[in-house]
Length: 445
Picture (tube, rainbow, N blue to C red):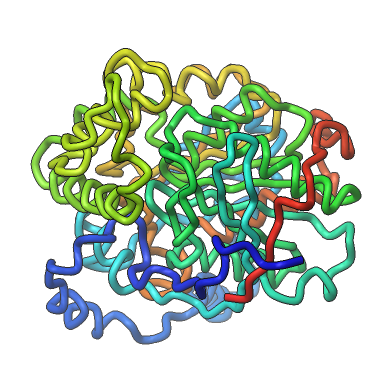
């Protein structure tokens, strides 16, 4: 098969480690790195103090250890599936302890994670999937896994946040964590993201799940004997939950992280205080994608306002000029109010773990649909007291390693894969997954 021209150029992952910092390189955070050096020495294991105390005490004294499956009070854990899923976790009995200094301010934590968190190396193989509307998305697999892993190995689909892709540090850490446990991992780069080609005058949106349908169908056709799982961050999490509300038989289990849930509330907070920095960074990233494919949008008429989108000073302006028109919404407010995954979560019938930070500046805690999660027997919510947006600089790998959430996510997914809990049936073989293999092209990256 002749490689598609869409995939001839080598893929270069973004140099920044988080989608919210695509255009924040002008900010100087170097002084922060000097602040953390005194805290980067190896710390004793969690139980070392208890072990020492037990050794020094008389033989008649006993040490009471916390129940492994009793969550620590520092974590807020609710959901209709609370009792069902809590046995999955091995570390929730420990307190959530933010890394010193970095974890005390939500903006410092968010930005530090973007600039300084290490990005693990991974050799990826790219496939370009032509969608039914002649669009294209890019799927990045770990190179060689098709031959190395058994065909029934569980498959994990990763959905990065707005403008994010497989080069982002939080995505790479999750990819490595899952792959080291024998999972097959694929990153779903949306149109224009992660150097994914754009072939039509349409990107993607918070409510558009058409591409997700086609990606899941393709992956399921390729590995018909494997269970499929998905993890989404930020806007990717919103898209994932909206998808799960409509599809209950294709994904075995899923995880949503830093989900804005209520886009109306998220939009309100996006224009307040320091949040304008994130707004500007994301807007610049969106404008860059549009600029790189400007020729596709030259003759767009009707309600399109391409000059407004091309010169947008906020995500809201970009969505008003382009996104909301592309997907048929009357206004940007109509788009936001009808794209909220907070309205969808009550309909989710797939085992779903949601993890949020109470101090997230981009996904406000007041937008979390607490009551609907409590009433849904398939959902579990974990809220950490700190974490920022895509930060979670805590745990044994802090401050430069994997987020605190990665271990929690894998505990949950492996618990589902083991069949230890009686979860709703969520994988129905190859039905509805047929997609022409002629649409797929390969590229080593």
